[in-house]
Image (cartoon, rainbow, N blue to C red):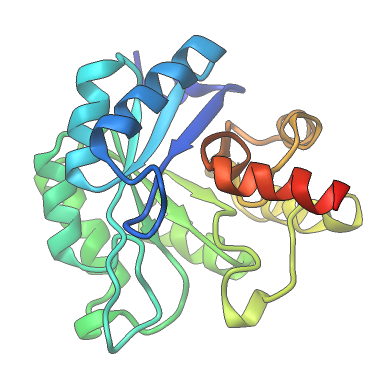
Length: 227
């Protein structure tokens, strides 16, 4: 089944834990993916080749793959260079998500080169543009991305303090209106109600991470509410 058909109006669970987080482990992320499947998740977003391989062994769900890597010469860190793209192709991920902001990339690589690399070496793998602005989504469409996501809204200097759910989902609606490629809702969607709303507003599918898979943050919300 084609990935957009499999994920249409469905929930994708982001199963990630960075090195400084308590659940950092490919084994644990594999089990987290099983839990996501049991709870009704239809896809997984995962970080690193080792996590992707483990998750693919545990669940038969589409996997959106990323590799987070810090570089000293750029703020871009989600699938930032050709090195990460090639690794994700080899990992046989179903979709590759790439930071598609207009910021300078590491090693002065261009976003177009990354898109062209996938189109040439693995045209069966779909491409997701992780964006922070509507303009970036429009550029991603022009470059040939298969979909654009709101992943980075509020996480860049230009969009600091923004949230796609603010002002009756004003920013998210702008994404929907701006491009013809599918829009994926991701980023600060921390309640089931918000997830349902973005799907009703036109999201092709919704990605939820921290509200499901980061227990330290979930606990903190309860702690802050009752202290």
